[in-house]
Amino acid sequence: MNETVSQYWKSCLSRRDFGKVSIAAGALALPILGRSASLSVVSGEKIVKNVSFLYRKPEFSHEKFIKYWVEVHAPMANHIPNIRRYVICPVDSYPEKANDPGPDGVAEVWFDNLEISRNFGSTPEAKKWAENSRTFIARNMTVTVEEIVVIAGLDASLR
Picture 1 (spheres, rainbow, N blue to C red):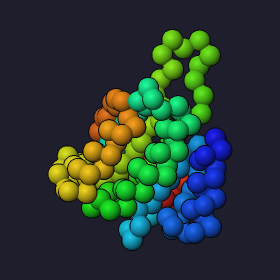
Picture 2: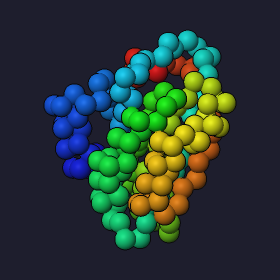
Picture 3: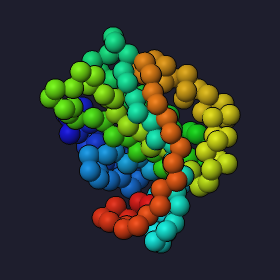
């Protein structure tokens, strides 16, 4: 995990800003303040997510991109209604021979159902968040998925 993310994590934990947090497979799990950080995990339960692959603007180094994402953009999610969970996954490395280095990070925005996922961008808070993303994100590819939990694994307490 890069130094910026590590420092941010320590800061969050010391201030207890984000409540229950976890690092799972290099991802930063940022439960939304004032909302339950846990979902019951039952085999076959569906979770709806928007998964976005994010590419930085040319004027941002990878490190500057991650710092802005973690310190400025991510906390804005706390003010958006109907987000169940927000997880950011900064990319630590790329394949050595890649012509296109790929995304700088992957974001997951969790929702209770597909309808909420489709409509969450209509609130003033979500519009402000989207506008802010244009500060540091050159392009992204977002897909909506329904996660089906087959094996709960170690991160089950946050689902």
